Length: 146
Image 1: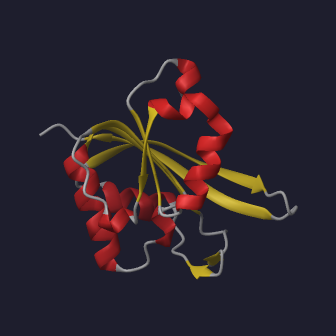
Image 2: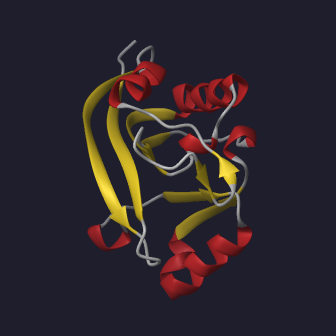
């Protein structure tokens, strides 16, 4: 994104170690990014976001309370677009030893329908470095006008 001219980028991850790896990979460019270590269900943003990209967090939210907290945060802080990547109904029921929730285009769209309009959904069969296949669903949404 930096290479494409985007500015004011925030990266959030629950793992400080993962963020450190990303910072090291970017070198000096990492200074242009706002890095946040937090569980998404505890994240309290003090800003808004034009674009929110979630690759493989939403499917870890397996309780109604977790999903509601995520949606509350998204409704308050996303002003433009969201892209969500989750395991599809053909995907795994666990990831990194943790239970996950699978989604179809309809079930994911239903989660966002009261605040966001679906733009498009696509599926992707991702081959991992361990030569296994992960089945993902990616959906893009636009924040509804009030």
